[in-house]
Image 1: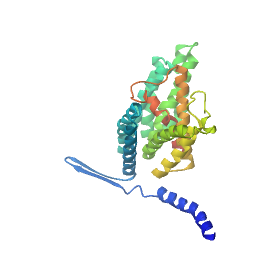
Image 2: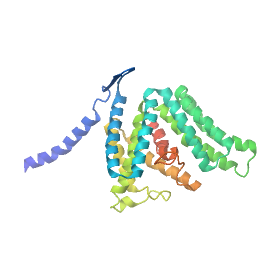
Image 3: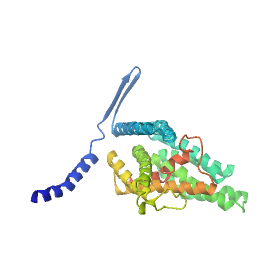
Image 4: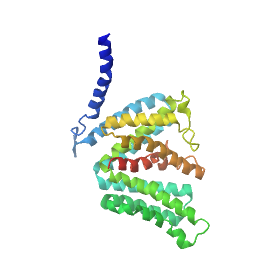
Length: 316
């Protein structure tokens, strides 16, 4: 009887020890050496660990997806394979290329957003300018981002100068909101450059975990409760899956804190709901149609647009 009690008492300690060993694995000493023809690549650091984790998960997911023979899942997996290098390589290279990446993402997202909320060309031009200005400021002059609240107020200037009494307030509100939601949020990726891929990867994995939680927990009444009428498919079960997924992924990646856990889990789910509100207002299902399996770019990065600024707060 005494031996049984001792074993039961030691089990939590064993689990805790295993968790701490995983959390404190050395992720900075891994190397990637490639010598082929004119290519000589020798990299050491945490980025190499992220590379192998990403490759491993993509491989396992690919096996499962192709085994399912579902065309929609296969299309999404192929799109993921194309997206990851586009996002990962600039972040891997440095802060400057990351700023360029954020600028491109912001310009495409602004184009989709302007169409959704029917912004006028002059207001769209303001957002295009901020799509370039904010990432560059985050790279070269981070202190200038303190002026963002003032810029939001100035977003109403085109409506004021035009004397637009009928639509001026709406134009100013949508332009100001877009400047924060898209341009400023994406610029946060530059501010957290060293952890940017970690945050982006965790957000993407948490999206999948939220979907799995919504499906897996739906047998329970509490899990089927909708988080918002904006998107009935976003449920409490999905949120629970997001929290669990964020915890597992951040542990695997070796960077976990309460703030970062909340940023990735809750930020991802709420970011999705925020875009749903914009799309419902516009009366459309997707922000675009050019990204196979996902719709538009906003449909793909909606979670990131809230996760990134929250993660920036958690990591500083």
